[in-house]
Length: 261
Image (cartoon, rainbow, N blue to C red):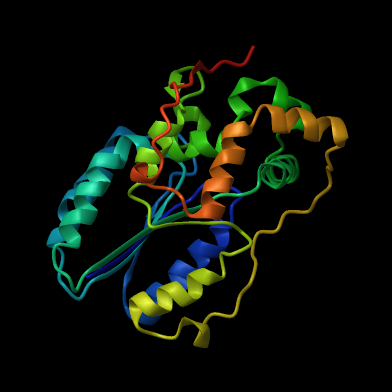
């Protein structure tokens, strides 16, 4: 059995990966599983089906190929950590099986630029760089999404975004890509699947939003100051230092109450 699992943080090359997954599923006769609800709100029945899927996954036929996309409308990795770790461990009890779990993150100013432009150009949203540093909800958005998924899941809640919790959660992830190195995924999947993906996949980039809005020096300074954990997360990706055993820092938890006044 081969399981390729992608946790999709917005604006971090996710459209490229999901398109690749669909193509790989077609070429290998595998199944593309799309845990994505465009409403962004978690549906209790869909959540139940998600956990049921993870529980039953290790019992699927040994020749199965799964390409799993995890995005809006489902729990974040913090909530699914135990179930996902259990499924991954059970699948890999057979040494012939593979379970490759990855995500992707982005340099913080590049991420915010892309997000603001996408929301303004495609979602008729009042997003702005100023709102991104003045409203707490927008601070360290990538790490919050990694742990808790879409903002609609935690907008008014107190959430833990500490480094120890993040490192524990990242401990089940095999690789954190960035948009700069996402093409390495082709060679990795080729090795896992034992096929040459480059023979049917030549795409480089998809979903590149038009940059109508550009941040100024004040925006950059303010955004860097309130997104230090996202900066840290990106540095973790670059250094491949993302298991709890590799970092013994005893950071105090950063618990914040999310509200938009």
